[in-house]
Image 1 (cartoon, rainbow, N blue to C red):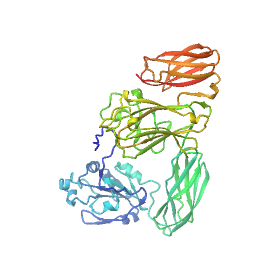
Image 2: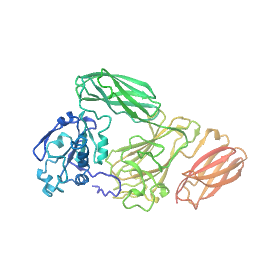
Image 3: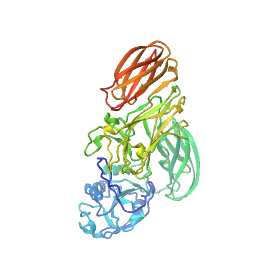
Length: 556
């Protein structure tokens, strides 16, 4: 069995499994319950909700370290003081010891059933012990902190500070108790948030927020100021019941819009929910993604989240004891894309996609990237794959797939694999199948076998020659590639002409320029690369106005 020694200084929540169930789904209807507090007073959930309170429910175990640590911050006590009946009178806070195997005495007496302290000290909100609530709320780990809205929807808010807990109660899906006979509400956008080519699958959660049954409604998608899709929904929702409606595929032109619901309605204030989607940008190839910058969500600039799981940008500062080398390719840059498969369950899939790349004027396209990987025990088959699509993601064609020992660049290590500068390898993929295509998406896929980490960097479409250039430059080749101290650039041209050879690093900085005259036929230019660090470089050859860019790898 793998021993988990987590050296990463990232926010990894300590979770204590209690059963194999999944938590209640976000925005599902909260089951009603009655609990008896430590003073013998009964509290019924729906009674509080019907009074307009938002209820925060902390399900903990007296022996749970993360529960105790959060409890000691008094965030929930502050919430009760600020927003409870003695404050703004908007919330109720309940702390419930939910482990049926522990005695109620553990709440007040340290040591009883492993209790870590007196859980009532400094606490004025409702405290109770209940042996049934864990099953009722599908408790999977401690602590679990739910927010339950007056319209009876439950959402796991987790261990947040007081202000964030208050802000969560102001989300647009948080409505008051039912007061109208007919009230159809649009609550939460549930559709896609990434549009590869303008098409977006749109879905919305609706709720019957009235006393009469909701049996029909018209749902519209509004984007760019106009209604672009309409759907006539029929069904039968009782009071407080919800449904997720697949409105359909909409062609959007901007990244924001609304989904509106219309029917016979006594309250028009909850009939619209906003959505925001990312439109994949277009770019003429070549494209370079160096993983050095990212958006606010942590997705590398130039890539898009296509289902990122256990994957994020990493640098050596993320480790409690930083490694000697930088974690970019060959140690030459700060960041790389990190597939945290040391800690991801078998079958976990993580994917990113590139911009739409225009290869319509390209011949001989190739793609390269740097990778570092080690197995854990030598038997795991963590996988890295590359595929492309020319039909907006409807179908994907695989061009690269390696796993296990074939993917490995370093020996197995029964611990967290941290890539050293010498652990990297550069892969080159033939992408000539997309020559001439105007909209090419490339997808990077990692699949965990609960083995060890994959580091991915310097994704680029180097070594391409435009169709326009072919009449001047017959061919360009580099030898050896990868090179160590010397590289030879062979250039075949049709006519005598002046030429410039430029060497650039992955950031586009010019490192060396060689001016020469070339004659019809094969010409050779020798580069002294002894002073170059390991990594990826671009060789730009210009002959009589025609330009060819190739990639050179230095690996010593």
